[in-house]
Image (cartoon, rainbow, N blue to C red; front, side):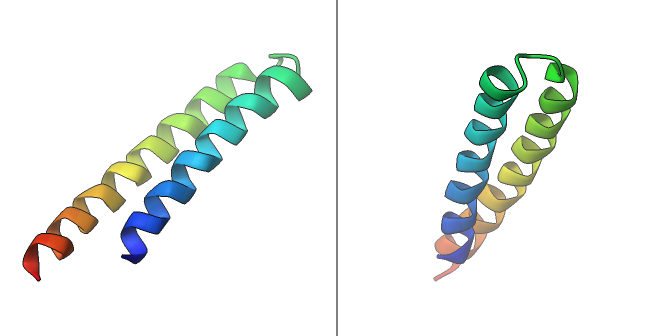
Length: 58
């Protein structure tokens, strides 16, 4: 269950990074925020794979 919660947290952080980049920073650091979002997406993929493995194992 902790992997599923972690996946939701990663998704919320992705949305927050996108909103901060566009509305607070006015898109000046959009390239950096894009890389952060890509890294968070990869982390979310790892959490999803772990959740799928552990939830089907039970």
